[in-house]
Length: 311
Image 1: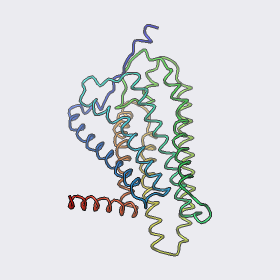
Image 2: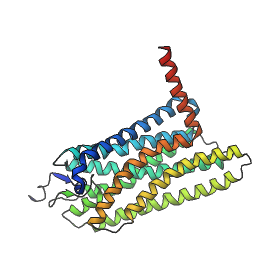
Image 3: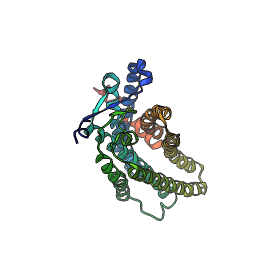
Image 4: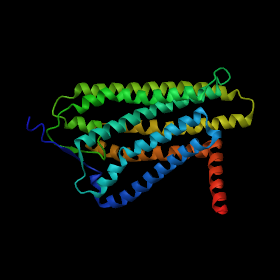
């Protein structure tokens, strides 16, 4: 029992092979973090203030931007402090909170993007048959957040009950579940299997639903006689599809690699841009691809300039 209570904190191995450039990495990560948070805040502000964007699709976009801010904030601030801290430690409570937040928000993102694909489907395929209102979009959004929470609640509870009494070094820049299981002082096969099954179900189910939705969307858009309407429809859904490809591509690349220290080090290097780039590019992709968002952004910029001239 004395050994089991000896571990009070974990040490994060934050890219040990490139310690000489940690200061430069700090600047780069800080700039990307600021851009990510600022870009998503701008999207949220535009969606809330522009009446033309008070539609289900943009309601989801606001949710996605909010999730992006929370997702990067779960790991990046601690990474920034670790890059400047020689010890690079994190308390057990902080580690558990970080692991839970990261995977709760990650799972929610898959469900939310799936809900957005269903929104595109209803918008372009059955909009004349279904009065798709903000009420339904609100329910789908709530279901996405609730599903993300329920998906990882049981496995997180099991991981948090594990005793840690041996080595306390985590080979990652944040508290990942896999290295946590490796540090546990008890058998973790059942927990590992549960985590694998849940992750496989989430990835498979959301990808299948998204593929089905986009299959219907493509058939619906191809039947639209107007070339301008068809181009607008493809532009809207292409933005969403680009974010989906970024997310699924990074996840598949990371988890399809063989296990091992060298592989883990490479995965860590991929996890950082995956965490930042997806959340950073999402608002810019939607802003550049969706005409209504670009118009609202221009109106906001022009309006601010007019106010400055009047003052």
